[in-house]
Image (tube, rainbow, N blue to C red; front, side, top):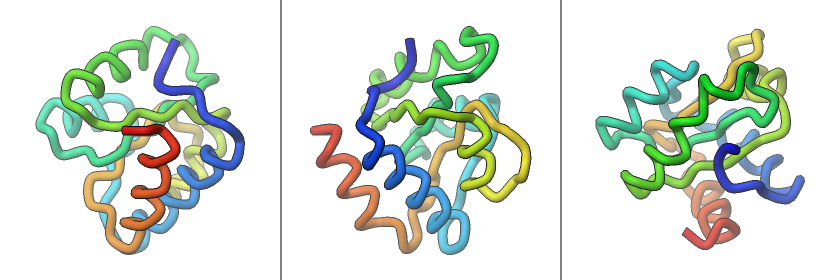
Length: 115
């Protein structure tokens, strides 16, 4: 359905990159904000929750990311995604817009995705 399915250690790195970027960079949280940042070409990395419900709310993101050449990763849960983004509520998608100190983590993730 969504972005590139990744092994558990890669999705852990994605959560970690989001947490680091939250502190030192900039995030967009929620499908509408993420969609806007992808369309404008501002997103560096997009994470989509595999358990987003209904799945239609995030179905367009992998296609849009591929079109724009932005890595798109599917993570297991929207709860963990919300926690790593620091919002305390589940979220279907998060985009890292400014990586801050997460630059090396994002480089590793991209290498694992072969992007």
